[in-house]
Image (cartoon, rainbow, N blue to C red; front, side):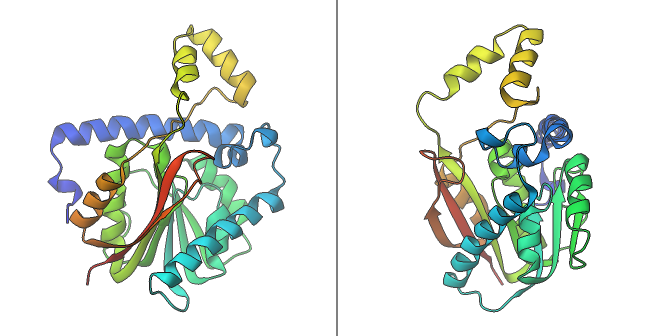
Length: 263
């Protein structure tokens, strides 16, 4: 299994640069409109989400994974769950009803600050800032489920692949790793993005604040399944389920992957 120390310096430098840019973007989004940034329903932009309704979507998403994990051979409840890219705890809360302990991590302190207010009454759920390109704050084999949903899709594959390897490391032998990634976007979508990126900085910022309520823009990255499976295999994960999924958006091809850590 690859450890952070195995990476060449050039790769480390690029990952650190990508991470810093990603963290800055999501810190801004976490301050401007955190619920909308997590679930970008166009009708909920500008603080438009009702919190109870927002959290109910987390229950529905986790219930879907619960069925898949059962189909993959898991029974009973989990002892310790990692919710990677937890945002404000939408999914961490749902896992908290199914696990003894849940740890949510996010790179944006603003998201975690808001999330801690939301999960304050749930003693088995804790939310932590993750300031690293890896999960070094956790020891090997800490969790029996490492989970991530609509998070890895917003980071370059260099970072996402590294985190998947870390999921394997922090999961117990025989434990599960489950996450979602889009593999192919809708035709024609990049055109408007290229036009906006070509605008003068001031105009670009005003346009994005008008359209999205924030000048911060997050990207969507598409990863071929064979790349995902290769990283999983290298990290010591066996694929159990690869289910088609449109969580990244209607018409966007993607999959939910469920792996098991080799004993």
